[in-house]
Length: 497
Ligand code: ADP
Image (cartoon, rainbow, N blue to C red; front, side, top):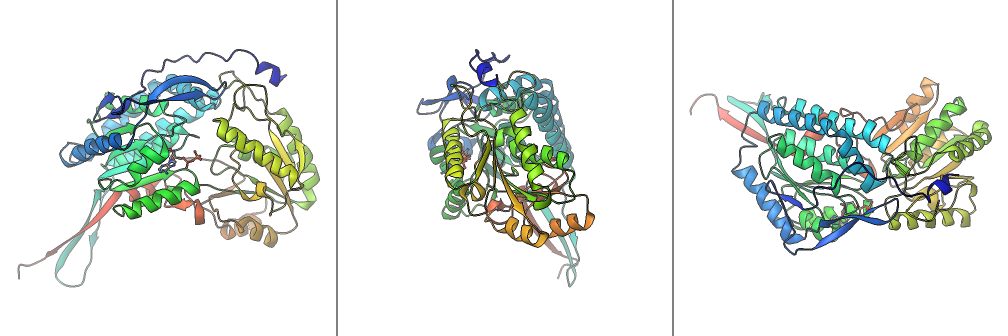
């Protein structure tokens, strides 16, 4: 029945695409080359709009605007309270335009509109209010040094921040990057993902309406190897923040090192374990494990993509996980009650189907799903594999799609070893009622976030980031400010010599 519904005409989004140009120095402008690229509707593969395609010369212009705004503009010098008020006004405007932002996000990305409108845009607003709160609470220290000196540290903005974001949460990634950079008084050149350029342009315009001085926030649409690489290797960018795949993370880190050694924060891939212990309430564990994997069409860097289940509850868990996946409501993301929309694009769609074939070939049991859904767009059936082994590709590599892999374990020491036996270290889920088990696991797991009896709890104040090849540094929370501040030590003798 879902497949039939997918053959119907897609619902028309209640929003117009207003902004498709680059935002440089407070103005919307075409790319210097005049080039554009199409951004596609993942429900159909059809063109939503043609968007200006930024190249290195456009990145140069944007960096020059950001440089000027930092060196000569009012932004870094105005009082922290004034900066805070601009951020708060921007948050109010984002809130006021909740529905347009949500519609653009869903149109360009394919995620359920209700998720955009009720969870993500409110979270976007919350994040900017949170960072506005920090703007006037950033201060250095007075340091007790040996000798007759007055020593203080000044916490200063770094300068021009280059920020490269992915397509899975376009606006939330915008907020994680832009929020702390602005709170600390930096200026920005942000490159959106080529799959989802629309919502950040709309949001950035609202910041200007809120009084953000021109040149402080520049947005360049374009592709990775051109616009992205130009930003990462730019000699006049003082800091780089990147979210995306581990492979691309290595590339941008190298570009940063080879150019001007700009400091880099990276938020990369994952293969997060979700561990269901033997004392777990199986129904609750099934629901949470399902959410941990399938949320956002499985397109989360922290997706619980290795579901480890204790052997005593394994059979019951597999049966119920399959039943839950079969009940998952897939369809036009603008329809109400939809749990899952299409994948972002044909490349990801094909990659997911390839991983599914690899799972079957390597001998995992395909419990349900395994194919595309409907005949157009990029919909994939909710898929569950059981009898998955650690060595299989589907248990080792990031699938980034609605494919759950269930693995069996016997005891805690074993599951700790297996859970940690990966190059990634982004997150983990632990499901147990036993406090000793929870404590043992939370301390043993080598990951940046452990969710105990919950998953994907993202609060503005909770730091997020990876161990090992899942990244460097932390975003959100107080920790994120460090990425955008320089520390200056000022030493003054107490008495003139
Ligand atoms: P994904 O495979 O999920 O699209 P990527 O890491 O390729 O992840 O993309 C994340 C972001 O990195 C996007 O904005 C993309 O354009 C950008 N990007 C891709 N390749 C490069 C590159 N060589 N240099 C800089 N940025 C890049």
